[in-house]
Figure 1 (tube, helix red, strand yellow):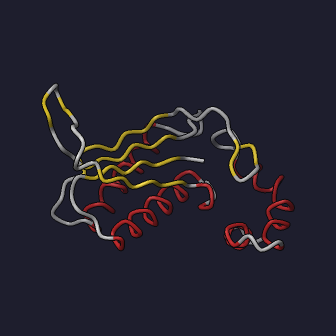
Figure 2 (cartoon, helix red, strand yellow; figure 1 turned 135 degrees about the vertical axis):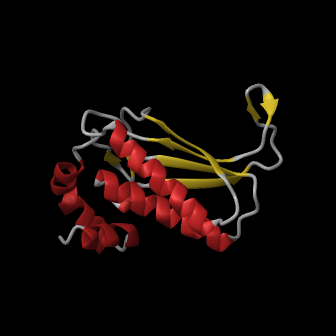
Length: 154
């Protein structure tokens, strides 16, 4: 459901990328009760691109998050996630700065893995309503849906 875009200018190892993706998934899932299966992360090296701050070329590491926004998600929620992402970055990529964490409440509707995505805050009900279909996908051999069924103890 959410799409996190990690743009980095410092070198990252594959292990660091894996750890960042895992940390982002865990942080988002815990704060917003979203299934891990639907947390998307893309990590892109932008060291060769020209980026700017205040009209001047400036290279920085940053995370953009495209999320479902609604009344169930407060400024405080986003602040908690921003701080947790920054802390994870500092632990995984020590000695480098994560300059920006930015949330865009831009996801109003869509489909993922064949399912219409719920409104922000409706995840638990959505999971219950779709659990039989999730189990069927798991039984058909979809490892992601097997993990989802295990995650929610169904």
